[in-house]
Length: 336
Image (cartoon, rainbow, N blue to C red; front, side, top):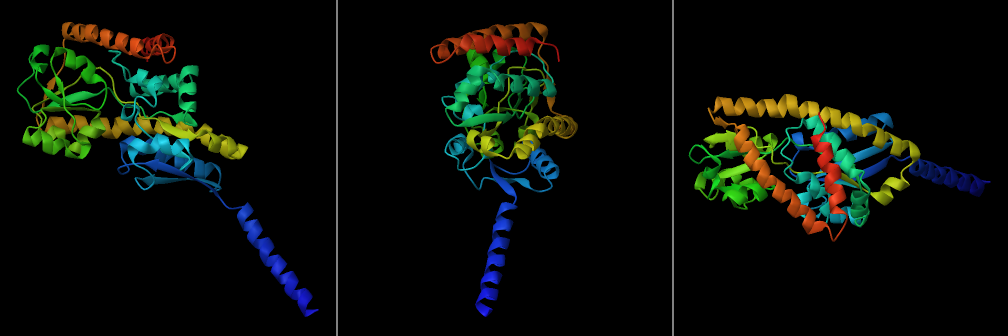
């Protein structure tokens, strides 16, 4: 009798363990870098919404640098080291050539919300899906950024010819255009931008507002451009395709249905806080604002057109670059 009671007790305990495992929350590891900032608010909001919608049964565990180096996040996704990550396409253009189309200088003044819409539609293009499938990756959500502008400590910019010899730290494709009028692309680590401007290693830096604020370029700048409109970086949020397919239907629905709300929050937060904060910062520091004339803008667009043509020629042998470019170009030309 005693043995029977013992066996029953052990059975109940084991059953309890099994039940605990069955009802354990599903957790996805998410690889980010740096620290929480305007740039990562889309992922932060997504994690919040997913946990709310599933009553804590599905959680996104965000890691800022603890899972992978930023430039290796796509690799980590490919072999399932983690389920979700953020990366920037310019980190490794050879690994994701199709989405670099969005970083081309389309010379269009588009709203941040519209940038998010454009990127989302490009992510759904068959050529892009095929490209990312090589990495077992599905593009989940864009991280829309405003058009990059330059902050410089050099003498006043009076004409486009003044770009000649200007050493610019630019992580995107803007230098493809400015290089044609003599600007010099100069690479320094993000964390050393302010120091490099102070010491004269670089004359200027090209960033979106959040990065200018993070590096304090405006504190040493003499001038900043307001309407360069030659592109910005594409830094999407990507998921491991197999992990996405293996999710419970209700968890997958919670994740996918939360993307639009997370993006709306991101855009609102960026515009109301980051962009407004940057505008105030350059005003407080009395930084001169350089706005290009229609004639100068037209000249920059002529140079940008050749850069866009070069992109098509470069990738036409790898995928239907012309079709993807035309598709993206039409999206940028649509009204906000």
